[in-house]
Length: 185
Image 1: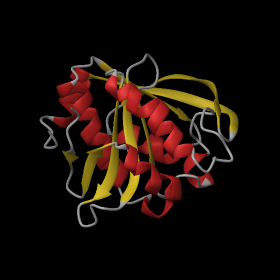
Image 2: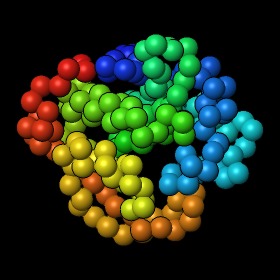
Image 3: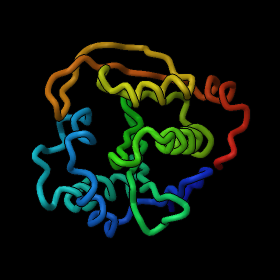
């Protein structure tokens, strides 16, 4: 069973099907989805969150191929403000989104630090790779803050269309040197 994770301001709670209702309200906004992979349907269907959670995310968690959490402020634990996930695979091991009004507050950096620590310390993975649209400055800043390095550039399909893309990477050893014992796990 997936554990909850805490940061200084957040509770990362394992994803549940009941979270689809709040996600459906917050998620389908252009500012949130434009740099996500083109597999995200746009316009977003009225049952998009339910279908994704029920048919993709939760089954992948049961198979041990993905780990998903919702983000909640400690002072408002009943209110979902975003989500983050880890995925087995070669070129894209982490994805996230956060409500537009909660962006640029450092909350996603906290969430990324917690799940990156989980990736290396609990799951014992040797390397974390994240793909992103090159224009996604916020995501790039998080990768830079985490000590990741750009390892590949190209193009990928996003909700916004075909865009320049990047893959950033950090190894378990580099993460350990960067964090020197992280407080989240």
